[in-house]
Image (cartoon, rainbow, N blue to C red; front, top):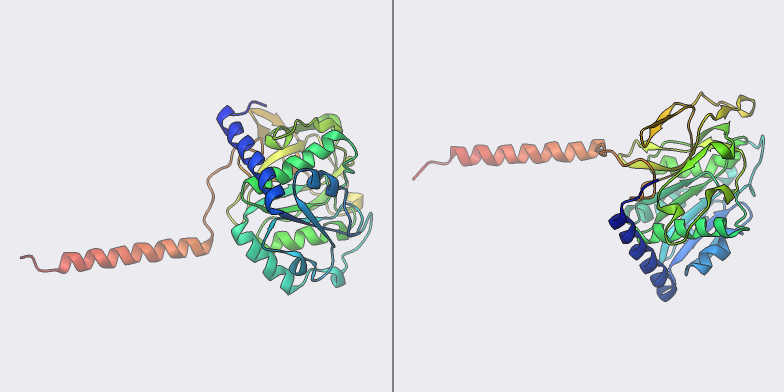
Length: 304
């Protein structure tokens, strides 16, 4: 995929700044997994971040955010739940977690939806991909990464969907089989600051459909990696047929979105104009009303 050279240069600078600032100021990245440990640790530490681990349990978000946090990973890498595992309400994040994360997101508004969370970061391309995501996330101002592989067990996507609901994003859904040969990628996750061969970034061949395109909150999630001719696997639960999509003028059938983001330049499809949320419309109409009142008062003033 072709990239805008000036845009790429800005991302290079941002990524380098993020890496240096991370090392100098001990920028924190919180990673919550089922086991409380993660294969992401080494890659993110090497990129200059201080990693804080936790589990997918109540109170973990609220107790781990710091003033230096630039990224929060809700990251079910398969260590919590598997095929057929049901939702566990006792493990849901708490109201305190919601308050803490929504407050964090208000000043760190970037998000990555990563359907490759089962990767083991055991080769250079996986490590570079993980490092690039974290560096670009921090360089863009920080934010949240939601990671899970599929919905073959509802517990796998329980926490990413809980957070998606808090932030008014669409939910992860279904389970689909996509062959690696039918995967298409583009954007800076695969180039900045490190080169990545996506064929070596291993998840599995089954993925949820992750949120993509224009979202209920008005944000646009551009697609960085997708598969086509994907096959629904209804034996694992509801898996509606996937829609076709056009990228760079090419029509692909049964597209399964695997990695999406609102970070500029990190996806294939350019963003569309955001749709204001209802409260934004309310403010606009209130502003128009105030302008109308001022105009009428001015018109009613007697002329000298």
